[in-house]
Image 1 (cartoon, rainbow, N blue to C red):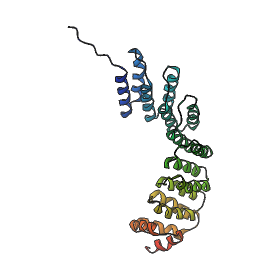
Image 2 (tube, one colour; image 1 turned 120 degrees about the vertical axis):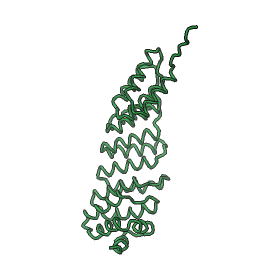
Image 3 (tube, rainbow, N blue to C red; image 1 turned 90 degrees about the vertical axis):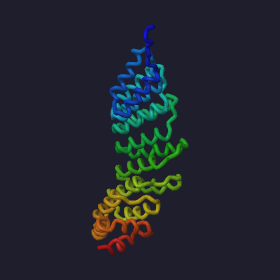
Image 4 (cartoon, rainbow, N blue to C red; image 1 turned 30 degrees about the horizontal axis):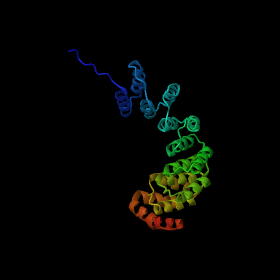
Length: 274
């Protein structure tokens, strides 16, 4: 009897393409996508999404957009996952304009933007120094009744920090509880850094106290930015007290920030260890 020939099908190719993502082999994923045609198979949305994901993970945002163009030229309709992956790739590639174009294209392609779409777009604007657009996107999420999470706010606050808008950064931080979002270390650190860059030394101390109240423990980034703020504000004794406490009494320092209520008490408590 002649040996039975087993032919790969769409499922086989999709699994192989997806495997390339975990091995960072985006070139193989693109090749497999092209090889499907040679096997008289039409790539479906899963095929394209898996291939585009490999390009995102591999930092190849241009190739991801090329695959999206191929997808649009075929009979395969891109979905929410397709666009979100491409937006994320553009964000990682520091191309905020492309990210915004894709976000605006989603409704036209009947793929409704979700929290992931907006968060990636806000992050793209943050990395591109576009704090005004980042804030508009955050407001748009609220208007679209999408859930704004800690990623949304943290990216927007970081955008304000890079834009030198420390007041807006603090406004967003204070807005979070009303949106039922608990800030984390990244959120607070961005706000502290925003104040530090603008020469506001008192506010970083208050934020350190607020961090402990929000169960977000100050870390090296938090203290470094606060010490730098004290240096810029000519508060050498406060900077020295904080540095000494970090070096020699880190556990006692954390205990102080958990139980202290007023930032003006920080210097007295910390200088006790000198």
